[in-house]
Amino acid sequence: MYISDIVSNMPEYVFSEFQKKKKDLEEKGIDVIDLGIGAPDLPTPDFVYDTLVEAAKEPANHRYSNYNGTLEFREAVADFYEKHYGVELDPETEVLTLVGSKEGLVHLIQALINQGDKVLLPNPGYPVYKMGVHLAGGESVELPLVQENGYVPNYDQLSDEDLEDAKLLFLNYPSNPTAATVELDTFHEAVKFARDKKIIAVNDSAYNLVTFDDYKAPSILQVHGAKDVAIELGSLSKSFNMTGWRIGFMVGNKDVIKAVATLKSNIDTSQFIPIQKAAAVALRSDFQSVRTNNQVFQNRMEKLYHALNEIGLKCEKPRGTIFIWAQVPEGFTSSSYSNLLLEEAGIIVTPGTAFGSNGEGYVRMSLSVTESRLDEVIQRLKRLGKLSAK
Ligand SMILES: *Cc1c(COP(=O)(O)O)cnc(C)c1O
Image (cartoon, rainbow, N blue to C red; front, side, top):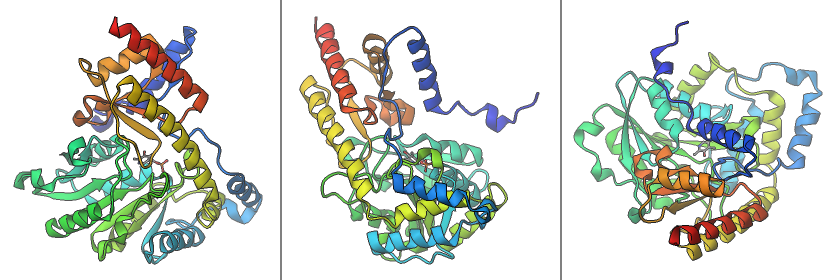
C-alpha cells in the first residue's frame, strides 16, 4: 500500500486526537466535560431546515448546482454584504459558494501558490491554514501574535527573506483561538501591506456574526479599494449553527474568485442545491436567531470569565467567538495544565500550542456547553485550585 509523502507527513487533524482521549476516559466511566469543542452545540434554526426539507422534495433541486454555486445563494451573499457592511459585490464574479469555509481556505492556497511560495500565517492560528500550505507544497511564514499587541500582526517583524516569494497573508478576526477582535484600522493596515508587497490578504470571518453587546465585527472589504487585493471567507457554521451542513462563501477579488472556482469545478462541483437555498434564506433573515444564539454564548462567557478571574486564571473578556483564551497558572505549560485538567478534573481544554508555538502559556476553552455544565466546570476548577494550593 502506497501513501503519498504529502499525506504521510501530515499530522492527524489536531482536534481528532482529543476526541480519542475523551472516548478513552468515558469508557472508564469518567464524566468528561469537553471544552475542546470548536463548534456550537445549539440547533440550526427551524426556518432554515424547513426550507431545506421543502427544497429537498423538488426533483429539479436534485441536479448538480452551478459549479460556482447557485445564483440565488450568491445573490443572498451579495445582499447580505450590502446590508450588513455597506459593501457592493457582483454575485456573478465576486462571490463563490463554498462547501464550508475550511475547503475554501485550502483550495484558495492551492489555486494561488506554486511550490516553494510563502504564505504568511497567524501564530497562534487556526491549524487549517498551515496544513493548507503544506498540501500546496508552500512554505509557512508565521506572524507572531501576542497579547500585549492585541493579537494583531506587526508587519515590521518580517524580514526581506520572509517576504520574498510571499503570495498570501491570512488574518482571522474575530479570532480562533484567541477570541481577539479588531476595528477596521487593522484591515486598513493589512490592505496597505498587501498592496505594497503585491500579495493577497485573506480574512477568515467565520465568527463575524458571533459578537456580544454592541460590538460589530468589520469586514476587510469595507476598506476602500480592498477588492484589488483582498478576499474574505464566510461561513454559516457558527452564526446559524450549521457546521454539519457544509456551507460558506468566498467574496472579494474577482481574479482570485475565478481561480478558486476553476480549481473547485474539477473537485467538488459545489454544494447540494437545497442546502444553498436554506442558507440563502438564513442570510436574508432578520438575524433574530443569531442574536438569540449570541446571547446564549455571551451568558456562558460572562459566567466562565468571572469565575476564571476569581480563581486566578487570567483572561481577557471576549467581544465575540465561542471561546475564552486563558493564561495557564504559573509553573505550568499549555500541555501540562491541559493534562492536569483532564486527569484531575475530567475537563478537556485545548492547549494553546495546538494553534502554534505562540500559544504556549495559554489554553482555549469552548463555550459550547450549557451553563449548568459550566457551573460544574467552575466547581471542579475551584476544587482543583484548593488541591494544588496545599
Ligand atoms: C470553524 C472555523 C472554520 C470552518 O468553518 P466551516 O465553514 O464549517 O468549514 C474556519 N475558520 C475558523 C477560524 C473556524 O474556527
